[in-house]
Length: 233
Ligand SMILES: [Zn+2]
Image (cartoon, rainbow, N blue to C red; front, side, top):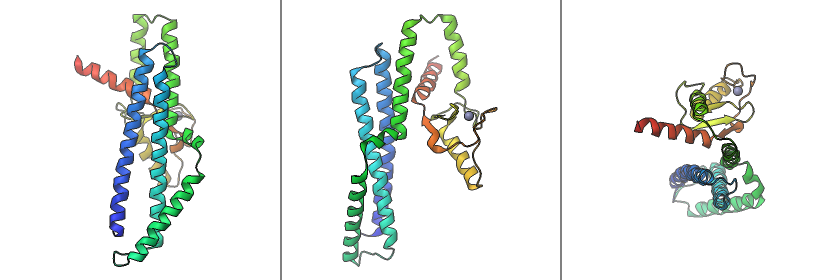
Protein backbone atom coordinates (compact mmCIF):
# COMPACT_ATOMS: atom_id res chain seq x y z
CA UNK A 1 0.00 0.00 0.00
CA UNK A 2 1.27 3.44 -0.87
CA UNK A 3 0.04 6.95 -0.29
CA UNK A 4 -1.65 7.08 -3.68
CA UNK A 5 -3.73 4.09 -2.60
CA UNK A 6 -4.63 6.03 0.51
CA UNK A 7 -5.81 8.95 -1.58
CA UNK A 8 -7.83 6.63 -3.82
CA UNK A 9 -9.55 5.21 -0.78
CA UNK A 10 -10.31 8.67 0.50
CA UNK A 11 -11.99 9.68 -2.71
CA UNK A 12 -14.15 6.56 -2.75
CA UNK A 13 -15.11 7.36 0.84
CA UNK A 14 -16.12 10.81 -0.37
CA UNK A 15 -18.40 9.35 -3.03
CA UNK A 16 -19.82 6.99 -0.45
CA UNK A 17 -20.58 10.07 1.62
CA UNK A 18 -22.47 11.61 -1.30
CA UNK A 19 -24.55 8.43 -1.44
CA UNK A 20 -25.30 8.76 2.25
CA UNK A 21 -26.53 12.28 1.57
CA UNK A 22 -28.82 11.01 -1.19
CA UNK A 23 -30.02 8.27 1.14
CA UNK A 24 -30.92 10.86 3.74
CA UNK A 25 -32.94 12.80 1.16
CA UNK A 26 -34.81 9.62 0.25
CA UNK A 27 -35.59 8.82 3.88
CA UNK A 28 -36.88 12.37 4.32
CA UNK A 29 -39.06 11.91 1.24
CA UNK A 30 -40.52 8.67 2.59
CA UNK A 31 -41.20 10.33 5.95
CA UNK A 32 -43.03 13.11 4.12
CA UNK A 33 -45.12 10.50 2.32
CA UNK A 34 -46.02 8.98 5.66
CA UNK A 35 -46.87 12.37 7.11
CA UNK A 36 -49.09 13.17 4.13
CA UNK A 37 -51.02 9.92 4.04
CA UNK A 38 -51.82 10.18 7.73
CA UNK A 39 -53.62 13.14 9.13
CA UNK A 40 -52.12 12.64 12.52
CA UNK A 41 -49.07 14.72 13.11
CA UNK A 42 -47.11 11.85 14.58
CA UNK A 43 -46.83 8.65 12.59
CA UNK A 44 -44.94 5.81 14.29
CA UNK A 45 -42.88 5.28 11.13
CA UNK A 46 -41.58 8.81 11.29
CA UNK A 47 -39.69 8.14 14.50
CA UNK A 48 -38.03 5.22 12.74
CA UNK A 49 -37.11 7.47 9.83
CA UNK A 50 -35.64 9.95 12.25
CA UNK A 51 -33.51 7.24 13.82
CA UNK A 52 -32.27 6.31 10.34
CA UNK A 53 -31.44 9.92 9.55
CA UNK A 54 -29.45 10.14 12.78
CA UNK A 55 -27.54 6.95 11.95
CA UNK A 56 -26.67 8.36 8.53
CA UNK A 57 -25.60 11.64 10.09
CA UNK A 58 -23.33 9.73 12.44
CA UNK A 59 -21.75 7.82 9.59
CA UNK A 60 -21.35 11.00 7.59
CA UNK A 61 -19.64 12.67 10.53
CA UNK A 62 -17.31 9.71 11.05
CA UNK A 63 -16.25 9.79 7.42
CA UNK A 64 -15.51 13.51 7.76
CA UNK A 65 -13.33 12.91 10.79
CA UNK A 66 -11.62 9.93 9.25
CA UNK A 67 -10.75 11.80 6.06
CA UNK A 68 -9.53 14.68 8.14
CA UNK A 69 -7.30 12.53 10.32
CA UNK A 70 -5.86 10.65 7.34
CA UNK A 71 -5.07 13.91 5.56
CA UNK A 72 -3.41 15.32 8.63
CA UNK A 73 -1.34 12.25 9.36
CA UNK A 74 -0.25 11.70 5.76
CA UNK A 75 0.79 15.35 5.58
CA UNK A 76 3.14 14.67 8.48
CA UNK A 77 4.75 11.79 6.59
CA UNK A 78 5.28 13.17 3.09
CA UNK A 79 8.10 10.78 2.22
CA UNK A 80 6.39 7.50 3.03
CA UNK A 81 6.55 4.95 0.22
CA UNK A 82 5.80 1.27 -0.21
CA UNK A 83 9.49 0.59 0.27
CA UNK A 84 9.18 1.55 3.92
CA UNK A 85 6.67 -0.86 5.40
CA UNK A 86 7.55 0.22 8.95
CA UNK A 87 6.56 3.81 8.26
CA UNK A 88 3.33 2.65 6.62
CA UNK A 89 2.56 0.72 9.78
CA UNK A 90 3.26 3.62 12.06
CA UNK A 91 1.19 5.83 9.78
CA UNK A 92 -1.82 3.56 9.97
CA UNK A 93 -1.39 3.14 13.73
CA UNK A 94 -1.33 6.88 14.11
CA UNK A 95 -4.50 7.30 12.03
CA UNK A 96 -6.24 4.67 14.12
CA UNK A 97 -5.17 6.26 17.36
CA UNK A 98 -6.17 9.80 16.41
CA UNK A 99 -9.46 8.71 14.89
CA UNK A 100 -10.46 6.68 17.95
CA UNK A 101 -9.54 9.55 20.19
CA UNK A 102 -11.60 12.06 18.21
CA UNK A 103 -14.64 9.81 17.87
CA UNK A 104 -14.62 9.19 21.62
CA UNK A 105 -14.94 12.91 22.24
CA UNK A 106 -18.06 13.28 20.10
CA UNK A 107 -21.53 13.39 21.55
CA UNK A 108 -24.71 12.22 19.90
CA UNK A 109 -26.34 15.52 20.79
CA UNK A 110 -24.16 17.25 18.22
CA UNK A 111 -25.81 15.17 15.51
CA UNK A 112 -28.89 17.32 15.98
CA UNK A 113 -26.94 20.12 14.32
CA UNK A 114 -26.19 18.08 11.19
CA UNK A 115 -27.54 20.01 8.23
CA UNK A 116 -29.74 17.17 7.01
CA UNK A 117 -31.04 16.32 10.48
CA UNK A 118 -32.07 19.95 10.90
CA UNK A 119 -33.72 19.81 7.47
CA UNK A 120 -35.56 16.61 8.37
CA UNK A 121 -36.95 18.04 11.59
CA UNK A 122 -37.93 21.28 9.92
CA UNK A 123 -39.71 19.35 7.17
CA UNK A 124 -41.58 17.15 9.62
CA UNK A 125 -42.63 20.14 11.68
CA UNK A 126 -43.90 21.88 8.55
CA UNK A 127 -45.79 18.88 7.23
CA UNK A 128 -47.38 18.37 10.62
CA UNK A 129 -48.63 21.94 10.74
CA UNK A 130 -49.71 21.72 7.11
CA UNK A 131 -51.72 18.56 7.82
CA UNK A 132 -53.42 20.32 10.71
CA UNK A 133 -54.20 23.37 8.58
CA UNK A 134 -55.61 21.24 5.80
CA UNK A 135 -57.85 19.27 8.12
CA UNK A 136 -59.07 22.42 9.81
CA UNK A 137 -60.15 24.27 6.71
CA UNK A 138 -61.49 22.81 3.54
CA UNK A 139 -59.34 24.34 0.89
CA UNK A 140 -61.59 25.64 -1.85
CA UNK A 141 -60.60 25.53 -5.47
CA UNK A 142 -60.26 29.27 -5.64
CA UNK A 143 -57.66 29.19 -2.90
CA UNK A 144 -55.82 26.41 -4.56
CA UNK A 145 -55.26 28.53 -7.67
CA UNK A 146 -53.82 31.18 -5.45
CA UNK A 147 -51.52 28.71 -3.74
CA UNK A 148 -50.21 27.49 -7.10
CA UNK A 149 -49.39 31.00 -8.34
CA UNK A 150 -47.69 31.83 -5.08
CA UNK A 151 -45.56 28.75 -5.00
CA UNK A 152 -44.56 29.06 -8.63
CA UNK A 153 -42.97 32.38 -7.78
CA UNK A 154 -41.05 30.76 -4.95
CA UNK A 155 -39.74 27.98 -7.17
CA UNK A 156 -37.42 30.40 -8.94
CA UNK A 157 -33.93 30.92 -7.59
CA UNK A 158 -33.17 34.62 -7.11
CA UNK A 159 -29.68 33.97 -8.44
CA UNK A 160 -30.19 31.78 -11.47
CA UNK A 161 -33.73 32.98 -12.27
CA UNK A 162 -34.65 29.41 -13.09
CA UNK A 163 -36.49 26.75 -11.15
CA UNK A 164 -34.50 25.50 -8.18
CA UNK A 165 -33.17 21.95 -8.12
CA UNK A 166 -31.85 21.80 -4.56
CA UNK A 167 -33.57 24.63 -2.72
CA UNK A 168 -31.99 25.73 0.55
CA UNK A 169 -33.53 28.12 3.04
CA UNK A 170 -31.55 30.79 4.83
CA UNK A 171 -32.49 30.41 8.46
CA UNK A 172 -31.60 34.04 9.15
CA UNK A 173 -33.80 35.79 6.57
CA UNK A 174 -35.97 32.86 5.35
CA UNK A 175 -35.06 33.39 1.69
CA UNK A 176 -34.56 30.48 -0.67
CA UNK A 177 -31.84 29.87 -3.23
CA UNK A 178 -30.57 26.99 -5.30
CA UNK A 179 -27.79 25.38 -3.29
CA UNK A 180 -25.13 25.38 -6.00
CA UNK A 181 -25.76 29.00 -6.94
CA UNK A 182 -25.62 30.40 -3.43
CA UNK A 183 -22.56 28.36 -2.46
CA UNK A 184 -20.83 29.62 -5.60
CA UNK A 185 -21.70 33.20 -4.72
CA UNK A 186 -20.52 32.83 -1.11
CA UNK A 187 -17.24 31.36 -2.31
CA UNK A 188 -16.71 34.09 -4.90
CA UNK A 189 -17.40 36.83 -2.35
CA UNK A 190 -15.18 35.23 0.27
CA UNK A 191 -12.38 34.93 -2.27
CA UNK A 192 -12.64 38.69 -2.67
CA UNK A 193 -12.53 38.91 1.15
CA UNK A 194 -16.06 40.26 1.19
CA UNK A 195 -19.26 39.18 2.88
CA UNK A 196 -22.05 37.69 0.82
CA UNK A 197 -25.19 39.83 0.82
CA UNK A 198 -28.53 38.03 0.40
CA UNK A 199 -29.34 38.33 -3.31
CA UNK A 200 -33.05 38.84 -2.68
CA UNK A 201 -33.98 42.43 -3.49
CA UNK A 202 -34.74 44.43 -0.38
CA UNK A 203 -33.34 41.86 2.04
CA UNK A 204 -31.27 43.36 4.83
CA UNK A 205 -29.19 40.24 5.46
CA UNK A 206 -25.67 41.32 4.58
CA UNK A 207 -23.80 38.19 5.65
CA UNK A 208 -25.06 34.92 4.19
CA UNK A 209 -23.10 31.98 5.59
CA UNK A 210 -23.09 28.39 4.45
CA UNK A 211 -23.99 27.35 8.00
CA UNK A 212 -27.23 29.36 7.77
CA UNK A 213 -28.49 27.30 4.84
CA UNK A 214 -30.88 24.42 5.42
CA UNK A 215 -32.01 22.17 2.56
CA UNK A 216 -35.75 22.70 2.06
CA UNK A 217 -36.96 19.18 1.33
CA UNK A 218 -40.59 20.20 1.28
CA UNK A 219 -40.02 22.79 -1.42
CA UNK A 220 -37.83 20.41 -3.43
CA UNK A 221 -40.65 17.92 -3.34
CA UNK A 222 -43.23 20.48 -4.43
CA UNK A 223 -41.04 21.49 -7.36
CA UNK A 224 -40.58 17.87 -8.37
CA UNK A 225 -44.23 16.99 -8.14
CA UNK A 226 -45.20 20.03 -10.19
CA UNK A 227 -42.65 19.00 -12.77
CA UNK A 228 -44.22 15.55 -12.93
CA UNK A 229 -47.67 17.09 -13.35
CA UNK A 230 -46.46 19.35 -16.13
CA UNK A 231 -44.83 16.43 -17.87
CA UNK A 232 -47.95 14.31 -17.73
CA UNK A 233 -50.23 16.98 -19.21
ZN1 LIG B 1 -32.56 37.27 2.45
